[in-house]
Image (cartoon, rainbow, N blue to C red; front, side):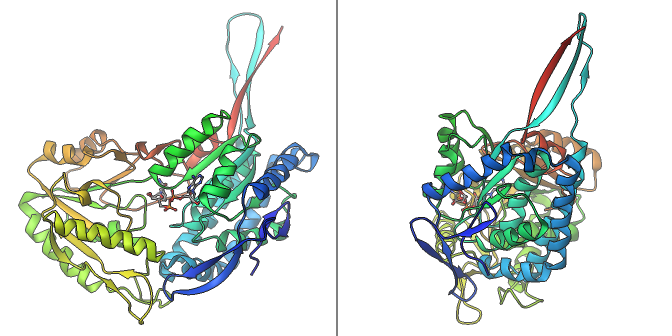
Length: 477
Ligand code: NAD
């Protein structure tokens, strides 16, 4: 596969000649050696994206044709879904089962925004006086997309698909751990026939390539998904050039089980909420809040379920818990498990690193009970398969605990009382609330955070707004 930088529809080595290894976290083997872009390469990529944005090749391409390019890319990706899913599993460690779901979502996102391209319209405005006044919706310009390693191609598509649909051009900086599917997608872009410079991929470090993209005066917008800490830093850096910024950041999402819930469904939802994607999911339901009356029953079922969820070869079609993305992430997760033990939480399942085939950075499905709100594992994002269970006495106490976090990305509510569910959904400060469900996504449903989980939205019609400027035109009559 191609492992150079993709700039202006060409494959180029980094100007510095530097490369970096990509490791398969399930086998610990180096599987690729990728060009490491830095500021000089970002300059070239931004120049290509700017050149394309200003060019007739892009400007004269009708919105419908732009949309058609996106839907063609969707068709091509769909026809190669298995190959892309295997690649996603190879650099990320997630199960093939999960990679196929992720790539299916990517296809759907490309199609969804392909459909939007020719439906972006302004308004006519009934102003006072002898004027005909209307708005135009125009593309922001060059977009820098900086993405994490947990859903590598899917989260990238949440940015580049609406950006391209809106008429922007894109420089994508994938995470250093997982640049391979973005590069493979660039091959599809060539095949589909996007004009040179519309879509560029520059793998490289966050503090080198990533920071250069944020600082670049010719980039109009940064769309970032990643940690809250890096998001804050990006916001400060972007201020110097008045860039528009969208931030999708971390979470510590509450998943609330009321005593009147369908407990079988709720326990299943709690498990997929934390163990899907090895818990390396921004919206993971990592704080399970259980009403005291059903606490013992729920915890017993959860512990039993977690013990059955053994980590294994992610390419095996029956595996449901893959390898963590890297040794570093495994160490981080293990250090949080140790903190949980040190601070007095009760470990009821998992807790250890394992190597199913003698290799790999795996951590068992882990459940801590008797977690108090002040404990580190109740407050900080772990980004691994570690669940913290807290108990609550009544509705108000449950909602109070749910909101007792600096984050506000998502929440789950399990109850058969639909009015209670609606009251809780209103009271919880989070960008997504799932009632009797968890981890449901759709290209048409906006996703993003309240509070320290960021601002702006990916997906849905709202994401398009992040790539558009509004121009008001006054015609004197
Ligand atoms: P990260 O913040 O370390 O890195 C994200 C991206 O930013 C990477 O491409 C990285 O190279 C780049 N980066 C790092 N430092 C940078 C800098 N100084 N300037 C510019 N770019 C820089 O995050 P991660 O470890 O890759 O991903 C995990 C985090 O992402 C978690 O906190 C998770 O919650 C969050 N996340 C959020 C969402 C969401 O939609 N809210 C989705 C997925 C992941």
